[in-house]
Amino acid sequence: MRVDTWFITGASRGIGRAIAQVVLQAGHRVVLTARRPASVEDLTRAFPEQTLALPLDVNEESQVRYTIRRAVEAGFVPSVVVNNAGYGLVGALEELTPESILRQIQTNLLGVIWVCQATLPYLRSQKRGFIFNISSIAGYFGFKGATLYNATKFAVTGLSEALAQEVAPWGIYVCSVAPGPYRTDWAGSSLDKAPSLQSLDPHSPYYDLHALMAERYAQMDGQQPGEPTHIGQVLLSCVQMGWAPKHLILGDEARQTWEKYYLLREFPELQFVGHSERAPRPA
Image (cartoon, rainbow, N blue to C red; front, top):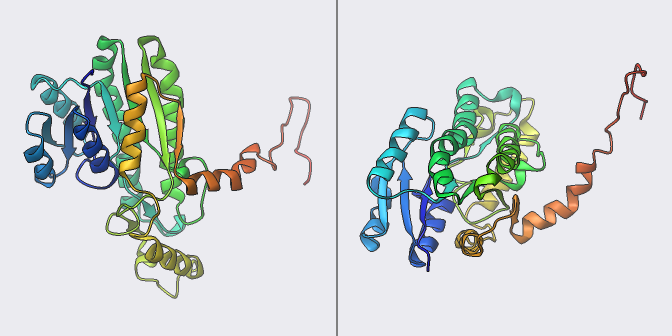
């Protein structure tokens, strides 16, 4: 069996931890990165020869490059990269704070870019490799109240599709991984909310939307139908096959969402305006 070295961001919990568990149990090696490496001590104790735990805040480009150099110097040269670090920011766009907007973009999008840039030289030198960028079904369809999260995940999906074409000559597969609801703390402690959603401010013009969202997330948290290790099993199967699609939509609920909304991606309200035309046609 070929032993791969997986570099996983956000490995302390949720999908990242689940992927790490699956991969380690299959005998592969993993660079476990997290803001607090102590949060993965149980994995390093259980798999001492297969793991390397390193601190990483993907918001810091210089720290990303430094962390990857440390991994390589320790003999953990990545052949599979999982860009998992990220979280949800929800609430009406008008009421999101500038700080929360910047942090969402830095973590969910720029972090993916920094990790891709820093690991690609090592994947190219091996003339093989995989990059799995964790997007979301929200990276394919827009949902009210998740505007910024949608924006970052749409960007990750587009980035992945384009990058896959750039690096294909070196035998590198780039895959946008789009889960539906899986049992993580995405809808719970990891979720960042607009202040008026957090407090359910009755004076907000978006109170009705926020009240519906608050109820939805309360019902969803911890009750999502998907088991996160399923994602790890699917990604591991791709690596074992030596191939990955450009897009992976995971979970029955994500497929149901796709089947419900995919016709919208045909853009029924889209119109082309040619050079000789002056205006679109009224609907």
